[in-house]
Length: 290
Ligand code: NDP
Image 1 (cartoon, rainbow, N blue to C red):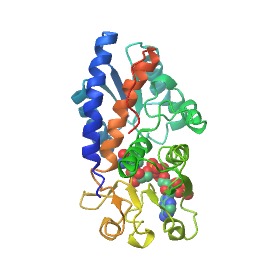
Image 2: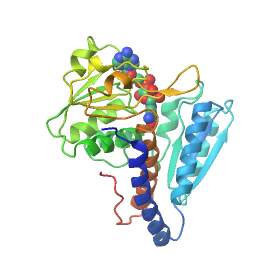
Image 3: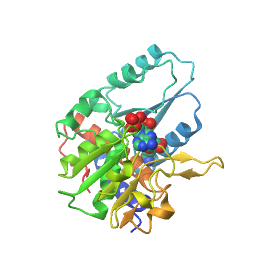
Image 4: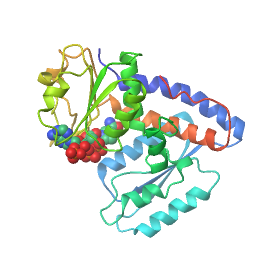
């Protein structure tokens, strides 16, 4: 089974479009997402462009604040403060990475947790640790959606997550734990990685190492989720999984591109609507569960 993220994202976005229309009618204004883009990194510009397009497609107002890479941290914090206080702003996202002279943690922490649609403030990550899922990081949420498309009940299954960033690996490990999977979290210091991955019913590769997970790392019948987005010298994209050797052994696998990537963007839209709805104390449920 190929877990087609583009298809699943389209289905989710269609539902979100209806939700967006209902929220717009109910609160008499369009939900809005504000993205802060610092500098000229080409991949960041591409990601922000995709976010803008999806927002437009479903009826969310998208505003991109483009700042030069020479901007100082104080100016970024001042912009976030303005957006925090603007009642018409529902979601705030800072596109990462930021230039080295800006402290990323300071910037993330300055976002109002109710508008933190990337789910990366310590309040929202803390809620996730507690099992209280409020605004969840979009990529792990998208991975979980695709895993549920393979199997709805993952209780008791062994999931091996390769990569421990807060943005992806660690948050996903928490989400999977919350669904009663047994989780092993691997990283660059893990000794004999394949000894762990070969035991896994579910493997999530989120390490940024092209082709690290091969067919030899996979138990027959496993579900393999490839989060990695790596650019080859010719400009094409490749994941952290060697698709050609993994595909015949896995029961289900995500491609790169069009696997996790579209789900990440779709859940950013879901989080924006959820942020608006919850901040304005509405009761309309936003479908965050598969
Ligand atoms: P980070 O660089 O923050 O983290 C990488 C993690 O992988 C670290 O925990 C690191 O270990 C681990 N790692 C590195 N090398 C190895 C190795 N040889 N064996 C095992 N573990 C290893 O990356 P991100 O988490 O931000 O992103 C991971 C990948 O996912 C990237 O390719 C990124 O582009 C992609 N990505 C894709 C998204 C999507 O929407 N599809 C969204 C976000 C990211 P250690 O902690 O020990 O250094």
